[in-house]
Amino acid sequence: MPSRDVVRKGSADTRSLIIALGAYIAILVLKLAVYFMTGVMTLLAEALHTLSDIFVTSFLLAGAYYSRRAADQEHMFGYGRAQNIAALVAATLFISFTSYKLYEEAVPRLFKSAETAYQSLWLAIGVILLRGTFTPIHAATR
Image 1 (cartoon, rainbow, N blue to C red):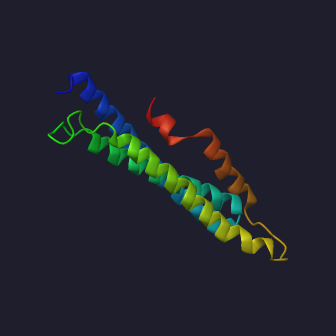
Image 2: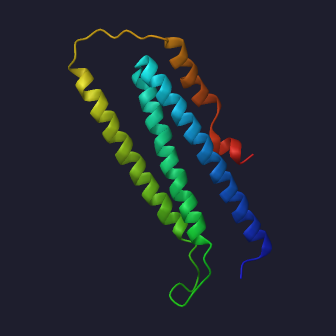
Image 3: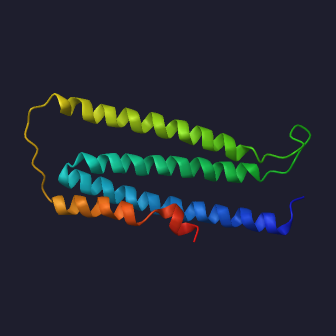
């Protein structure tokens, strides 16, 4: 049976992941809204990055919950390695999904000769700068 300190640490980690997940969702909505208002591709890339952060955080949260299961006949040392599997799946999804979506959006633009005109460029720059100054995982773990 895990000690009280281990259980408390697990609760703190889970709480941090839940807070980060909520913050990532709010940031995703903001980035997508500004992307649709401005059409700046960087914001789409940032939104997809944030979406991948949501997937990663979700898999880590699921892994944290699953790894708390007590040892049984089949898993004598418990389910602690579930977090490693969740991290592997999350990393694979991150690379696959982000690469595909950026490819899907960027390649057609390479062959268009249309001139790019950005409206509300200051709004796009503000959201991009927001990404650099606030990271939900770091804020949640402080």
